[in-house]
Length: 258
Ligand code: PGA
Image 1 (tube, rainbow, N blue to C red):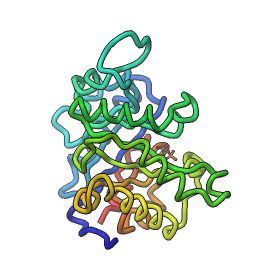
Image 2: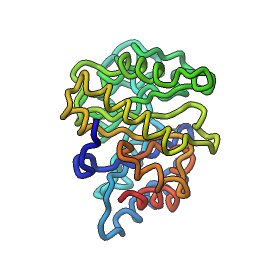
Image 3: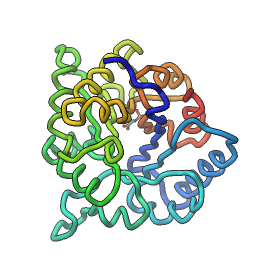
């Protein structure tokens, strides 16, 4: 499939703070990012931060008016009910979230989340009017066994809700072995998997829907490797963990978008 014109997909630079940030540090980081963003004369990307649940309300207030999107790192599949400790998608929408990460490999591994669980959570996020950032990616063992394409196909098919579209869905390809390790796929490997994901997306979304859907790369993206990864025709931004906790590095990644 030929790559869609770049204008069709404005890059999304998304920060996944994971379980980091007490109030003072988290708010300072959010304000620093917002100030730097506002200081940019022009920019060719959208920027999203996904702090822990505890900071969402305060971060939203702290960056009010800035062109910075707010997202959560997870949600429950149900809109309300007896689910001690969980957070429902409408609660996140009410706080000002436009995006919710679902199916991150740390949740798939640490909380036993299946593709069906991820699909239900993504549907809940979409149903609450937000965009689901659906994470998929193979483990090192699966990569070594030559199963990357099969795993990515299976996770994508199993995790994408009916009713998904280019506006309510972002896919994040995050090879598990690249997360927090300093390792990344080669540009050729990354482009091949992203192209595969786009080809697979055309089944449920159609060619136009697939061509308009953003597919992010995640896993040890940093200011040094971002330019090469973000220049790949089917890489439409990044889901960034460690490097999103330093405003200068996070913005430097954004500036790699051409
Ligand atoms: P990393 O994390 O950038 O620290 O590798 C990415 C992620 O897990 O989303």
